[in-house]
Amino acid sequence: MSEQPPAAGRRRGVRRALAVAWLVAAAALPAGPSVADAPGSTTLRVLQMNLCNSGRAGCYTGRSVTEAVEVIRADAPGLVTLNETCQDDMAVLERAFAGVHRGGSVGSAFAVAGDRPSGDATRCRNGRPYGIGLLIRLPQPYRGHSVHRGMHPAQDLADPEQRAWLCVHVPHLVHACTTHLAATSGTVALAQCGHLLHTVVPTIRSGAGYAPTVVGGDLNLRHGGSPDVRACLPPGYRRVDDGGVQQILTTDDVTVGARRSVGMRGTTDHPGLLVTLTVDPARPGGTVTARRR
Image 1 (cartoon, helix red, strand yellow):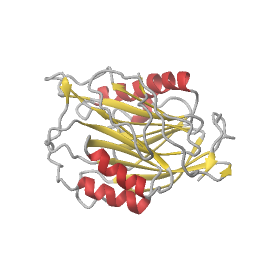
Image 2 (tube, one colour):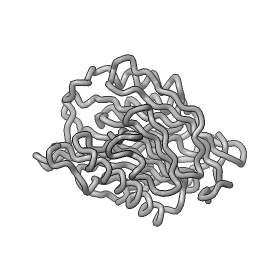
Image 3 (spheres, rainbow, N blue to C red):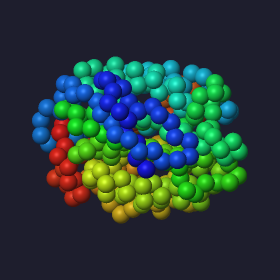
Image 4 (cartoon, helix red, strand yellow):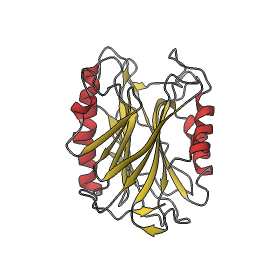
């Protein structure tokens, strides 16, 4: 269920795709200047974006990645969760992300959505794998991180796209995940949400160790909807949304601070969602030693 790639240079992440299977490996990046300089809480700015960049949907403009680069440069998030993106977009976005975190190390990961008719990956218009991605600034000194990805067991059989999940576990700091849930069935989306939060996250943490959890994604579930997104949250989770289906979920050792929608200037059909989080190791559940950026 986990993947950990071989050692790589600074600012390199994990780019290997997964179509329908779970992969296992080990990640390593060289140490660089510290991202934290004092004991205490860790402040983490999280940016969730749905780029609609497959080229197959009506919301496609071909300009969303360029706009996402500008948003990353302007807002300098420490964690970016990405939906409806192409595998080759990740290199472009990672360069922009690394550019706002000069002197540190960053990690990236990508998971493909499966394609039921072909049994392969869903493909973007350019033929590259399509799916979800994650960018994260890594703490210094670097002590490793692991990447975990897989397919949700519940899938809408009326939809050829098979939905995936993706997590990056940074020991003693954060467990970050993203997913893009079923758009054609609220019942299936709710089951997928429950699988990620009740099965995947606890399973990874049981092996990798506890870290406060942050999940960002287009869940295709709403507060007050039918079904309601709150129905899949385990006890002790917090939630914030963009007024629609994009959600950022956290364990209760993470305090949700300032939040705002980020205009994407018509390049995609979803605004970005930017939220400032504070991880406090002194709070219940916060069993990690975190550090302030």
